[in-house]
Length: 89
Image (cartoon, rainbow, N blue to C red):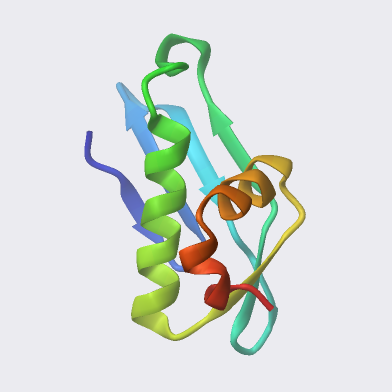
């Protein structure tokens, strides 16, 4: 599965329909808020949400930004991956 990326959003779409996405708008110069994770029912249980968070982590590392998490899925993901806690504010 190949994701599309913009500065504050990573998503997967098929036939023009967004089937999975994570959004992380800027809240300060080098800080984003991971505020929304969505996976369509047709893709649930396949690890897509985790792959989206991995893509966000790579983006944060590449752009030297940090994150806060108002999305419950993102909070839980970081709890399960303490090795990435350095990316959190």
